[in-house]
Length: 337
Ligand SMILES: [Fe+2]
Image: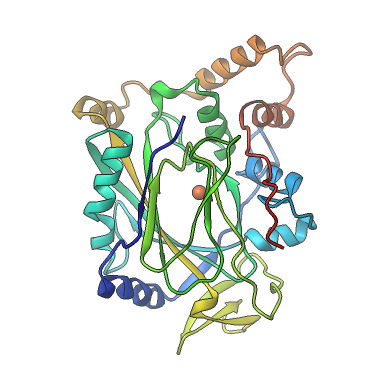
């Protein structure tokens, strides 16, 4: 089945698009998005997005390149900060948070009239970086990333067992600046069909259900300088005069020009069917619990014949769940060098 999406060749006015670049500069400094391994028994030691990382390492990404795990990690440790969380956390993001075109596209695609913008965040990728193919972390009534492992929420959605509790989230991704490469690649026809790519063109955007549709970011065009040895804790900081610096504190490991970077701004909104559903969410009258989630998953694994040797322990059970339910698109035959 084809998943709906809306592409915006032009999202904002010229002045407003330019204002997004100035906002990005004004915000000034962006932390590296790194992941810490989980500590609870279920899946202990696995990264929050073990599903996507494992698939990336196994396949070498969308183009099936083979590289060391260390190089792949540097390729995917990009920079991120939040511009709005329920309300603006930085001046000048209001118009984007409540963008009528995004709201209307979300209502259309999900066929749900109540759209509540929840978060706006910026991602910055440097030359040579890319984003492994994945689906985003979904949310359910009673299950979310504040208390449940991200890979488990992904497994839950891919299992289709928890649709009754799912909170559909619309995601808009917009791009600003003169980035080269870094196309947005996604699979609207499903993981077994060809990917569609959209260039990360200045002041354009796409809106879709990224919790359901596999997607990723192709490699940002590399400059003469190879990828620097990025380390967790480094920041990407605007120095003025079209220049960005990466490093700890004031030290610069490398510098980039604006046009070397891929700057995207993502928008996520809850899509609700009606007032009754909104109340159910607010009043927690029909929430999932972890025992119920595990019970439903284990019963389904049993039915699929995957528990003939008994129920495996914490980390093995996590790996079994990921392998059984999350079916990634295979690497494409395409070669782009
Ligand atoms: Fe995503």
